[in-house]
Image 1 (cartoon, rainbow, N blue to C red):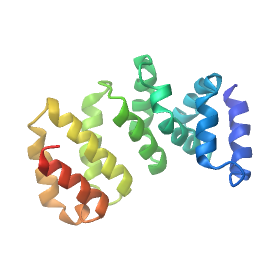
Image 2: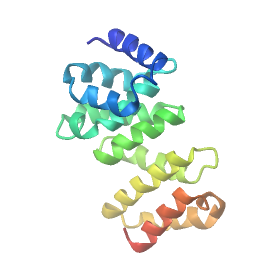
Image 3: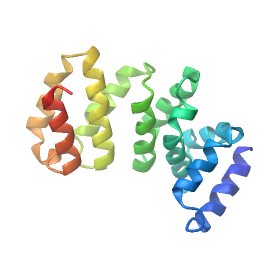
Length: 176
């Protein structure tokens, strides 16, 4: 399936998505590896709504089949797309993939963005939560990050009052 054919498929699904709910769509793609290259291409390429949103969401649900044990080029492309997107839905979807399949690609920039995300009131809660989880993964190799994270928590306590962020704090304080 080409990216153009997949776009038509996604549009048809969008129009009739009550006929084929998300679990059925995920199951269908798990059984159609010939679609994965096109799906990945759409997920990492800026496109008008709903293509990149749907493709990145679907990729996030196919992480085990699609990204684990694959070449690092795909994950580098996911990281690159995540670093440039301004769309919070896509950012959330790509972060989900990045959490499941760690990559060292552009790790300094990723770390900076994660710290920015957890301290930004303009960032979606899901993005802040996923970012916090990724930061906890970075802490394993860089324990000094704890000081920066603590500073952000102390400086912006209002950002950590929602349940998703409270859950992150609880895990963080337990030493995850």
